[in-house]
Length: 231
Ligand code: OAD
Image (cartoon, rainbow, N blue to C red; front, side):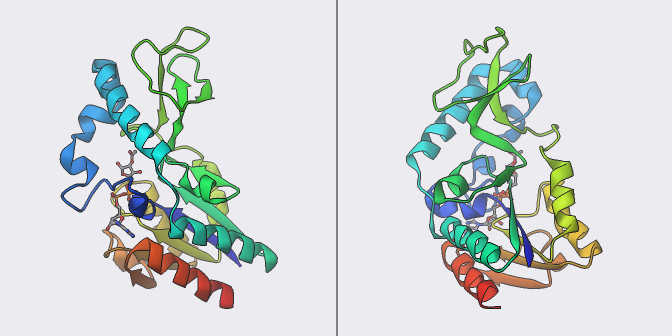
């Protein structure tokens, strides 16, 4: 069986990284994304944008994967043993899937622990704070290697190709509010793929899913993986 998993901020919530929408402490309730997560905001006030991502990067470096990340590692190994495969696509810019042990993670919204040159496009590892003086070898300004509002997500061809061979589509910890990620369930349905949602609460597009399980990711993802691997 080929399983396509799309994860969102909810899978990392119990690692202390916070979510964007929903609870009162959600990031986009406390901050205006138009001032922090757009190319225009970076052009206007790069220092403030860097400060926001520097704080998130420090928080990430101090965080650890949780039981939901670990369960997806177990799923990858279990499917491979049975001749299947896992495609793991994440909207998260954290590296907690990799640190848990997932072998290949498709980061459609980029990666916080990487920087990108705004001039030449070169991508480099980045564990440190960035500032307005941070420069690439070509002297171009460095920006976080993340996809901002108004920019095109990464790896979309690869993502749609993986959907073609999927037998099961599973969305975990995502509100279904941001496209094109939120539209992947519809693509899967159009191909006749069964769709399952694992989330704390019904997402914006919960009605699109055939199966739904609600609860904390650290509990519902391991138990769902048990069921899949027993089949
Ligand atoms: P959201 O913050 O929009 O949604 C997170 C979802 O996770 C919500 O539906 C929560 O109910 C759920 N959730 C919270 N805690 C959970 C837990 N412990 N277990 C399971 N689920 C839990 O995050 P995303 O859908 O990932 O994009 O957001 C999509 C994109 O919007 C992000 O990648 C980011 C943001 O703006 C960019 O920055 C481009």
